[in-house]
Image (cartoon, rainbow, N blue to C red; front, side, top):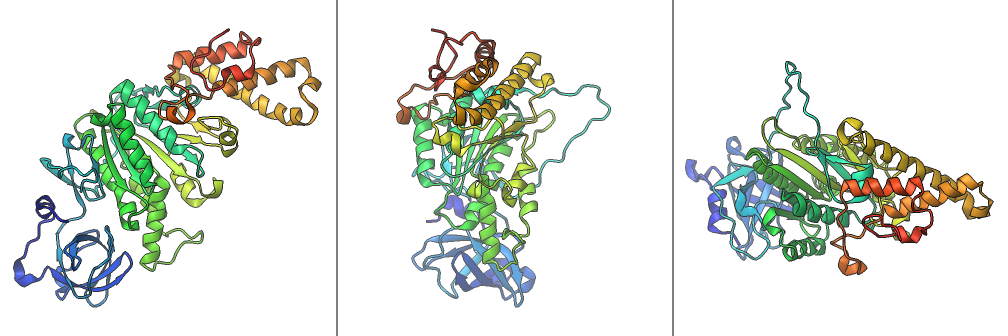
Length: 479
């Protein structure tokens, strides 16, 4: 039901002889056609229109396109059940507008700022429209100083050691269904909020309602809700809500950034944003591209990614984006479009997940542009390169071992194979957020401990130990 805050937020100017009043002309699922008799006052694109069902439930519509005869085609942000033909609608003269402010910490909002946590309405001093123009990049060609990217420790060994993050970067966690993308995101939230006390915005885009529920109670149990804002447009909602909820989450992050804060923006799952846009495009009758996606996919992805950037002299937005990979096909056009904007890409392997390797990050398929001696230091860089080389050697020898056995390898290859196996096992780690499933206490591993453990394995200090001794542990310890 609409509240007084909603009515104030989407206020309507009822002047000019009701020229801003229209009537519902047709309803086809989430697509609603509205007719305005006064064409000169028809709403613009992305303006929100208010309507009501016959039992008084308010439904918000977003203008998507104009048709001949004064008809405006809209995409519903709510269920259109019980909307009636010829019922009255009202213009709001603005696009989706949501409350912004510190009052949102610990709260869950939907796409247009309505609470989903069964708590009172969010009352803030400011309301921002969610469709905003990205900050213009600032370049200072006269300055001799180049700001060095700041290394960002997550406490997850394989990420910190091989695919380091920096403040203000964009990291994608790519994988098919069931590979553990959400678990990695939840662990990142737990570790970063606990260690860095950062401001976090979590945007749930078209994922399972259960996951949002689990996230809320997980944060509440660890007393982390006070540092996190949450926005959800889950898979049970219309495609318009799943498509627009990204803008709502970004708006909250941009507000915190405008206050000079360093913001962590978690998006799960950014592929569902593209999928929601595809459904909207299909419902509007647009001709799809050759691959079946909407013809505007590239510009839609660019519009979102370009808003994730730092402000000189102000705050930063560091984003972590889960990316569902359809049928594990990394050449899918949506995945490629998202991938081109990422600084780091963590590819989750279904084979590793099936073998019980968690996190199931494939070290040979993942990449990070931050792996640079100028950012992480010479020692970190060299150890990381040696680890990648040793794992690659292990993978190539493993194919031979599967056929002829390890005893048939040359002595030096046997040593490399065993050490490579230990390094790969060492890259697994018990997570705090999965303690209830694994029964193993989670561990936070500093980058110094990760480097030292990997170095000792490769130097042969643990040659007397078995590979299984390094499975699902934190720091490397001798017997």
